[in-house]
Length: 443
Ligand code: DOR
Image (cartoon, rainbow, N blue to C red; front, side):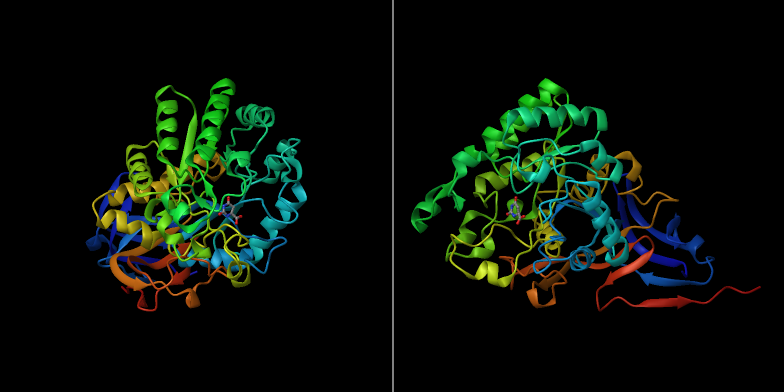
């Protein structure tokens, strides 16, 4: 592979406090050099990517997405999902185990890893089930899953409903050091609910999912994390009440991390008006007040990371009646553009946004992948390059994902991924990006 010089970009790497214009050289798939332009001019024989006016940061990491393979390949595959990731600026994606069969055995984890190695264009790191068959009754073979290489455990799509099982899982996480990622939902309270419970659900005549359905489980999980000292990660936080609970728990020293999705940070329940099934997601889109609390929580460190919960479904799935459509939003390709609205409105510093998508999720993923989320010299060259101000219109027809289910189709976003480099390989580039050849220096 020819060396690649990324020239004149503004480098933001929260893992090493970098925030300045620097050139970056990639050699044999690794970051080999970072420095000022004058020095760079003596670097020989490489391709050059002109990044003037662009932000260059560590490759984005998504701790929570659904790739649907095995079992639901009509919705997404590891190949299409990883291409969507590349198009969205992600170089590492962690896939949830609600597949068919679920990822609850060494064999299924090996299957995902082997397909990812053959067909994936970015790193694909599987998450194993908490319970056998995801049925919430008996712990999966946690040890086996850990040795097969999972980065955590989750029954996502479902909560771990039994407090006893959750306790056992958290106990185990103390030994393995791998997080238990819980989808916090009291399903008895949420049962039958289709959207956030409030004025809009009343107007639309749709059964609601109250904020309390999430908060009851968040509170229970925090109590169990305190009891066990286990490693709890709360998935897709969506309410102000959850932010308050996590803040209090962190103040008490309870070990917990939490994530929020781009859609819960930027869209309200009103997106459902018109019975828009593409805005039907679980947990549901909430209110402006929740968005403010989530943004505050993110900025203050109560919420550690942003994860997409990319949940692709087919057009046929989403076409029917609102009540029958599955929950989920296809999010990998709109994540960065959506999130940049928080930066443009002054609500979130750009460096914080990048940290929440790089260094912070890298910290949650086990040490053996400790070389993610950084542009440190010698680390695998996972790099995202984006234009902070470029406007573009979301067009599902050019999504790499099979999931066209987004409420953002046709929306204008400001902030666009221009190139994604995974282990030194250019896996996505905007049409306007051209590589130039720099001839070897002679004499
Ligand atoms: O909206 C959602 N879709 N929430 C989940 O928790 C699961 C996901 C899916 O798998 O489609």
